[in-house]
Image 1 (tube, rainbow, N blue to C red):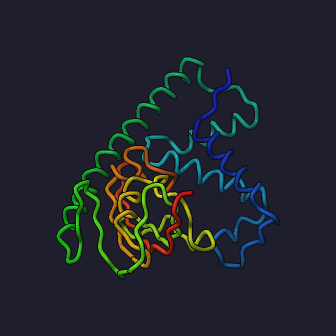
Image 2: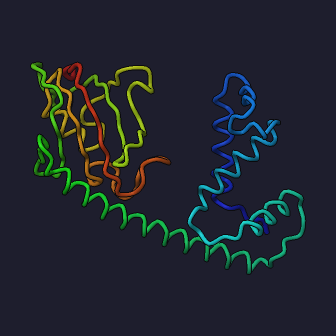
Image 3: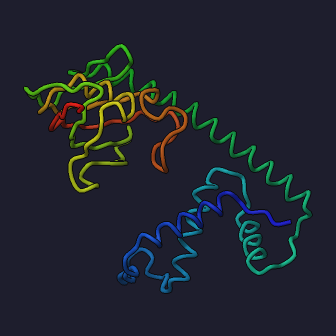
Length: 238
């Protein structure tokens, strides 16, 4: 019976996706740069895959040497050192660990988010709406405000509460355009309060963002998100 770790499958998919997006082979790292010791494509791919697997398994009680041995045996086609039942039981225990880790992250992030919002709401210039959305006016505009069905053009930058940037309009080549009612609830609410030319700092509670599901590798469950949003233009729905 062949079993594959979900983390390994995800890691392979991530590596294949990354490789397919490249238009030319990456240049070798400069001497002394990170990865300089990894001279071949085979070495770099192996290391990248290892990083992905390690990231997925971080915080779980897994023996490094046994993990390496399992990978080597599978790749070489060697007979497994565990019976089918032992493999099934071990994977079940691993899933239980992973679920406990995620549950703890949900609870811890919720507590940290609540504490952050409570402190931020007391800062000068910060206003809190009935939904819990917090905003601070950086620059005031005089244009029109959008309706939920309108399309807006904005510049934005998104960070976590620790300051780590996870997205920005500049990273995508310039202003972003989208219907007001097709973004996270915190944005939909804030944009309808803004006017063209406004630039606000938004502090968005998790319940108005991605809640317990999180989003991608950077936004965990119950993460409070901070955005600088500049409303450039409003286009009425046709």
